[in-house]
Structures are given as structure tokens and as C-alpha cells.
Length: 384
Figure 1 (tube, helix red, strand yellow):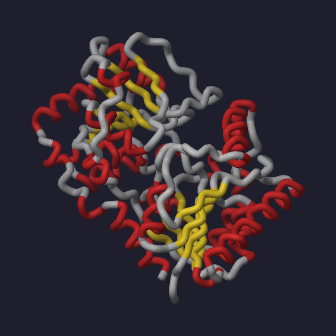
Figure 2 (tube, rainbow, N blue to C red):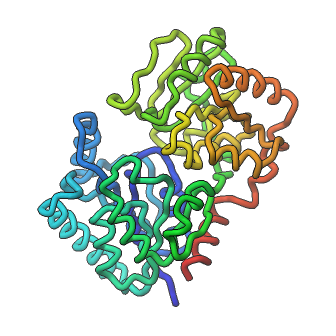
């Protein structure tokens, strides 16, 4: 079988925080495949707090700006469908499928591809994704599970079951998710995130809004939403009054209420992924203060790998998956886990001590075998 293209149904937009779907899509394009990256088509009905995202989608879909943020590599096209944001409505599904099918057909015809030469890689288990998976004779259908979507939208359950039956390969970003799904999956594969070592070579200055903050700088990068363990963040601010606790990412206003503390700094995400290098170099500790609940507990946080690339000690919630990763990486990685808010404070103090004891090279020793290029090669091995 010759694989020449990929259609990626992402659960995120192209210019959202850089995640696994972006790295794999970019890697497939660099490997020579023609890639259609379909931005998020929604897994649940909209809420009032989603209005800024809806406006942003309309702006992008109707007139994508010349400076669209993150550049797309050669061979990769980004599609922002004007999807009706009601994924379980019969009328909305019909409209959304009409738009998606028409764009996919245009992509295939424009690139001279047959569906039998194309892999469908989906991060969604919505009625729309299932219909697209079932209606084309794809070379392979791959379902990539990075979290349990049913914990966000229970109505996804029957559609995910159909997708699991249709998928030729199901990837799991964490061993915890693999264990949860194993009995319902015909070809499960543990497929952990890669390390983007290219960030180390980026000649990027530290943003002035970060450079002027007092040390130690305790950094969290990622979505500021319901996953964030606010009590641990507040305890950390109070315990390190001379330092800076930095939260960098988009804020989901309806999901999280942040305390107003003098050394808590909430900064917007960087416009381009490469700019994170300047932020990570200026940090002293990487933070993953996730709530210890089933949703966050099964995740492999992408930010962990970005912290480790820069040799940062990392303090994280002792979730089920992070405990497995801690044993997998070993003590030299600098990953320290905490079970309580007070324990989070003590772990940060320990991390600052360890930073003086271990060089970044010692903490980075296991990165080279799991770059994103290596992950893409493994993905192609699974679908060829």
C-alpha cells in the first residue's frame, strides 16, 4: 500500500496551543504526505463562554488573515469549516457533513489522491467524524485518544463505540487511557508524545514581560481552564512571595476563577510556538498543577515534554499517568509529584534544590530517542 495523504480531524484549531495533533500533522507533511488539517468541529453544544471562539472561527473561516499566526508547512492545508456548533442536531450534522465532504473531495481531487491512498487521523468521536470515517474507503482510519471525551460530553459514548469498531489502529497518548480502553479496542497502541528538540536551537529572546519578573520563576504553560488546580497555585504564590508564579495560556473564563495575588502573573499564549523557547529558557521550574480527577488524571500533558526539553525540574500533581511516567523516566528527569496543595509547595522547594544538583544535560538524557520525527516514523509504521 502506498500512503500519499492524510486528512486530520483535529479537536483544536491550527493556531491554538501547540499539541500532539499539530506536531504529527506537521511531521506527516514534512515526510511528503499531502495533509488536510480540519480545525475543531465541536464535540458539544456551545456555551456563552464559547462566544469569543465562535467569533474567532468566523473571522478565520471568512477571511483568514495574511499573518495567520503559526505558519503551515509545505504540503499542509488548514480548513476552518463554518460548522454549525450543534454536533447532535440532525440539521446541523447534515450541513456540517455537506461542508466537510465537499472540502475533502476538493482536497483529494486537487492533490490527485484516492481515498485508498489516504489515512484518516481523527481526534474526535463525534457523529460528524464517524460519518466521514464510514463513508470513504480510507487506506487506514486512526483514532488518536488523548483524553476520555465522554467525561466532557457523555453523548459521545455510542459514536465512540462505532469509531472504535471502524478504526484500524487506535493510538493512546497515555498508558492509563490504554488500560481503560483496551477491552473495547481491536488494535490498541501506546503512543506517547514526542520531544521537540528543535526548540533548543531557536534563537528567540525572552519576552520583556517575563524577563522583568523576579526569580524564582515558576512557569505553567497551557490552557487555564477547569483542569487547573487553583488551590495549589494559590498556595504556591503565598509560599514564594519573592518569586513569580506565571500562568501562560488562554483563559476559559467560565471554567476557572483565579485568585488576585501580587505574584501571580497571567500572560497570554505566545503567537507562535517557537517563541516558547524564550519563555522556557527564563524559567526555573515547570508546573503541572492539574486537578486530581479522572479527566486530567489519564492525560499525558504536552507541556511536560516541553519543560523536559529545556532541562527544567517539573512539579506536577500525582495523577495516575504522571506516576507511571515518573517511574518510566526515573529520578534523573527532575519530575516531582505532589498529592496536596501543601505538598505542591514543598515539591517546588525540592525542585529548586535539585536544579542546582543536576545539569540540564543530565535531565535531558532520554529525549533523543523520542523526537517528534521518530514519532512520525513510528506512526507511518503502524499504518502502512
